[in-house]
Amino acid sequence: MKIKRVIAIGAMALAASGVASTVAASTASADGVTYDGVGCYVQWFNTYGKNACGAASEGHPGGNIALYLQCDTQTDYQGPYTYIGANAKVDPIDDFECTFAATGGHNMWNR
Image (cartoon, rainbow, N blue to C red; front, top):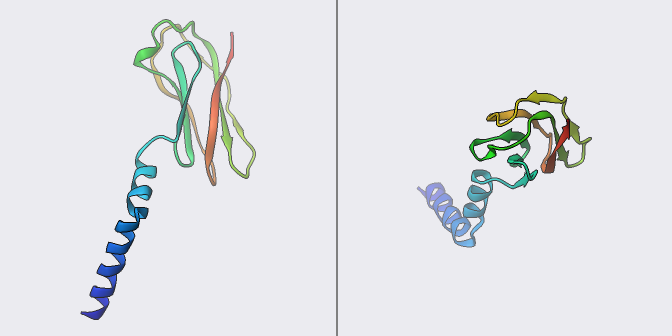
């Protein structure tokens, strides 16, 4: 019984401090999104990043697109160019998992 009481008190203290809700929120929401101005975007979470042209991308010109994802304490990822047609809806086009953290990114176009 004593162990259960200590665990319960520790859990209440952690919840009261806001740490538990901060951890839950950081894993449930995107860390960032970079839009490229033509309806496509790069989105990154904790260690994962992807690029996509989604439902709001009608009007993008198409062409060769590559993901550039910034990774913390390792070499940034530059993916291969992938051809997508004009107005194509593709999600993901490319993705990558950084070892420690994804910190930003952008699309590279080669038309």
